[in-house]
Image (cartoon, rainbow, N blue to C red):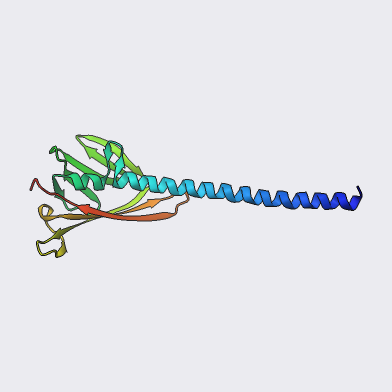
Length: 164
């Protein structure tokens, strides 16, 4: 084997190693991106629908016997069993407060806004001004990813309000 053949072999190996290194870097970057996105989506799911036996704010609103107040940044409802349930945002954490216990519902929540609506018998939807007449709720949540990037989520549901 001559020196030229040896150098050509080393150059080919270096090019292949560079390509493989680039693929590994892309894979690692993709893994970390997916991990961050999954964390944000999991927190949003926990906030809206809950996690196991801990019901989220939309689940609780749909199941509630009545809506107590029409706060823009909190949710106050009566559970079907009759005890009050409150969801409030404080220092980036969505808290679930019921029966005197305060439980962390979701982390990295930077903003929460609830709106309540009434649907008439004719199907006309208007923003509700009375808690007892609210039949629909919408919830806007803003979540923050580990690299300070914000994601917005919007959902809604129908309220029962059968205690009123």
